[in-house]
Structures are given as C-alpha cells and as structure tokens.
Image (cartoon, helix red, strand yellow):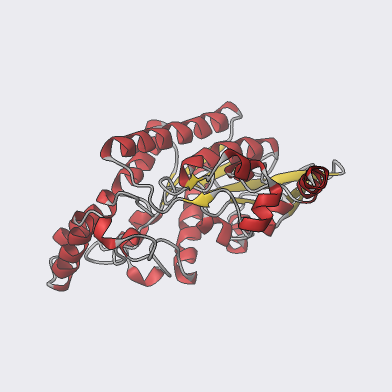
Length: 341
C-alpha cells in the first residue's frame, strides 16, 4: 500500500504541479525553442492570464509596451486600440502589447512581472494596480492551509481538494494595514527602480473605485454578518443617503471611508491611490490617472458609475477611457515620432 501511494504521489507530481501561492510567482512567459515567448500554460489554464506569443528577438522598428497589474489588465488582452493609436501617433511602426495581467495579484507579483518585461525588451512599463493588496492570490497570507501533509500531498489534494484555501476570515487591523501600505509602496518603488536601471519609461496608473458598491465583506456571503465591525457598513449607508440628497462631496467622503475602513478592502482605498500619485511625483513619472479621468467626466466629481460592471472592474466604455488615459501618458513620456528600437 505504501509503495502504491508513493508511486501515486510521484506520478501526480509529474502530471500536474501542486497549487500553492508559488504558482503566481511563476514567470508570465516562457521561451520555447529559444525563438518564441509564450504565456505560461499553467497560468492560462487556471484562467488567470491572457495567452500571447512573441518573438524572442524584438522586430526592428517595434516598441513593446508591458501592461502590469491584476484582472483589469488581463481583461485588456492585446489592447489593439492602444497599439493602433500609438502607431497612428508616430510612436513606432509597430507596437506589441505585453500583457502581464494576472487575476487577483498585487504588487508583490508586479516586481517579478517587471523584471521579466525588461528581459523581454519592454520599452515602456505601465503599472495599473491597487485593488488586490489585501486579497492577493500571490500572497500566502491570503490562504489557510490545513496541515503540512495536505499541503505537500498530491493524493490528498486530489481526493479532498486543494490545501491552499482562500481565507475568508482574514481581517487586517489598522497596524497591519500600515504594513500592507508600506509593502505596496516598497514593491512599486522597486519595480520603478528596475525600469530606471534599464532606461525604460515607467507609467503609473491610478485605478478608480466604484463607490456605489458596499464593502464586499458585508455582501459576499463568506462571513457571519454578526461578527463584522458595523462602522464601514454605516459609513456606506450614510454616504448613499447623502448622495441621494445631493450632498455629493460629503457623500463621497463617507463612501470612500467605508472602503478605507473595511477590515478586508477588496478594492483600491484612498491611501493606495495617494501612494500611486506620490510615487509618480517623487520619481517624475507620467501619471495615467484613470480615477481622476472618471471623476472629471461628472460635474460633481463623482466617479462615473456607468463605467463599472462590479466593485472595481470596468465595462467596455470604461476600458476605452482607461486605454485613452494610458495612451496620453505614453505619448507624454516618449513623444511622437520617437521611433522604435
């Protein structure tokens, strides 16, 4: 029996990699036969990455734009409107969009993605991140693991499910949130420094938040509502009431406070956005302020609710505005008719 179990373990490990947070630290692209970069099949199979293929040797007259971030970036795919607009603006004869979006991942993943983007000859790296810092799939703190044997046994995982299970009860104290914010800034500064070391332009994006959605911990069905702190939900209802009575500024403050004070924020908080804007200013980087763009479209300054499909993801119109904002920042950084490499 023990020999059969050992053989089963070896066979299963050979057939399929075990699921752990380390899956999300794998390189986004792998080189096949030294000539082609392809998106890692495992990341595509678990439906976390957009499948792409590129020549290892970048064609002459081509620039590569790396989009780095989470699910919103992944949903952009090859972003043809962006590459087409850049070609028409005279940025290069050809533009390739390297999509490094990985669903549910935060800034710890983006350092790894940036390093590979630079190895693949990226000329511009656009960061669009911030929604996943407290729920990142690439962070082991997101999960609970029953025991050592389960974590390492393919047979147990096959029979009883994955050992790494999303931890719904993981709440963050104020002190722990400060640690998350500090790591977010540190990770992005590291990624920006990598770009600077290669002479590559980094563009910092600021994501919008749908303030009309309540904090998800109260609506996702994963928690005993009685165990949740009531204050964030009270902030949300107070904000909605203020907005309904035309007090937009006060209402927005209350709605943003509901997101900020959630013990498990599921989207970008005001602090996250401030870190991104400060990062761009401190490093003299072009800012793709998608959040500001959406606020500017409404006379009241309220983030346009007509661009979202949920708490943070954008619909087709929202993605068009996002790509237009990326385009302006890239043109600002490189200038028209700057050619390719």
